[in-house]
Length: 332
Image 1 (cartoon, one colour):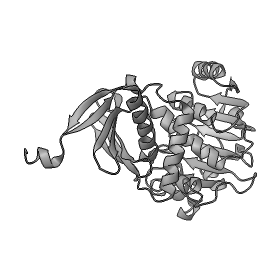
Image 2 (cartoon, rainbow, N blue to C red):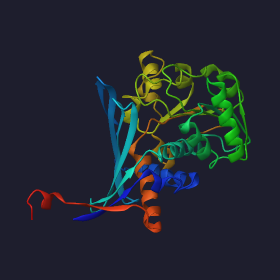
Image 3 (tube, rainbow, N blue to C red):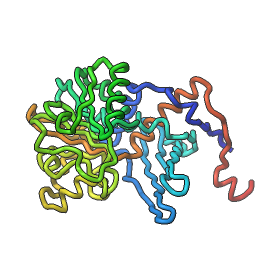
Image 4 (cartoon, one colour):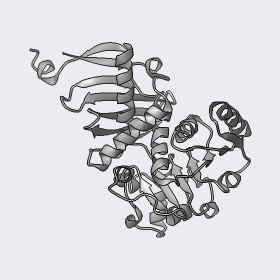
């Protein structure tokens, strides 16, 4: 038998701050850049009831952990359920099982922030944020840990949502956060553009991007999800979280491929390669860069292990027992 820690959402909620998530996720992508194993998501769909079952994983040898997400979304409950198994990367034994929902905006936001840190100009201080939900909150809070933000313009189609978001973030951040009435108004003169939506059509015009802008797109985890237009992809140095994901479920890149404006050689490098120094990031202040963040096991394992360590330190969670296969299959 092996003792394994079970961590409920209440156990891990607010257990780590955005800066800690950013540090953990950056280290995870550094390991990926040096050869750590990670694969794009596998998604199984159901039509009746409509829903999807998704999983992905990664091994972070220097962190000492491996695992990932398995989650369902939709189906009869019309909700999502995130489970996060975490294993010891040396022994293979299960370390923990986490309710992974509450960490999702922060581990995803930390990934976006690592992309900003690797690809945006050093003096970037203004952000355009398209989206005003939980993921947008995670993106902005984590981005504020890697750049000294002065101004943030947020657009969401619903006036109440964008204004409520701006009011909340004005209280939380040092930057001045304001709601604007259109994506164009948000993107104008922004140093960093962040899209945190579930859009099936582009959410801004790529011609509106000024030279030197960095774009982080985190809602492109399906061929039918398309936050960025082909102009943005064509104009930019394009960096995905995983190269293989760019040609399987990165909606905007796939559209650009289909329209013939780019080919697979347009993929500059994976984020991990840039973080590890194996590939160049930004090379001048006029370059437009895109980080395509569709979700991987890298940030999931990094974030989960961060929470696991903190939970152990504080004596949180419940211990459950797992039987190794050698015992369960033989009864010995």
